[in-house]
Length: 122
Image (cartoon, rainbow, N blue to C red):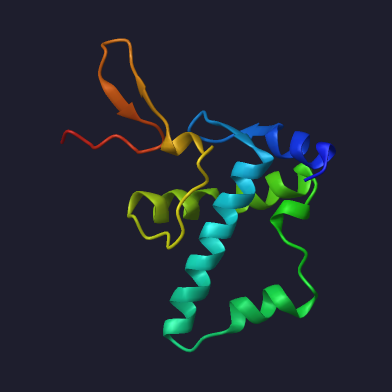
C-alpha cells in the first residue's frame, strides 16, 4: 500500500450521527458490508438490478473514492447501515478499526457498546 493511500485510509472523514469519528477505511468497509448484504438479499429473490446497476458503468469502488464522495455516499446510506447493524443482518463483519467494535468503560466503570440505540424504558 502506498504511503499516501495508507494516510488517506487513516484520515478522519467525518463524524456520524452517533458521534463516532470515521476514517476513510472504516466508511468504505461499512458501505461494502451493506452492499454485500443488499446483493445477497436480492440474489435470494433472483433480483440482480442493484448489482447490475453497480457494475454497468465500471464501478470503481468505495476505497477509490475521494473523502468527499465517500462521505456523501455514506450519509445517504447511514440510516440503512445502522438498521442492518442493529438487527445483525450485515453478512460481512466490520473492519477491525471500526469504532463499533470498540468497547469502552463509561464514567461508572460499566462496559458500553458504541453505536447501539438505547432501548426505550417504556
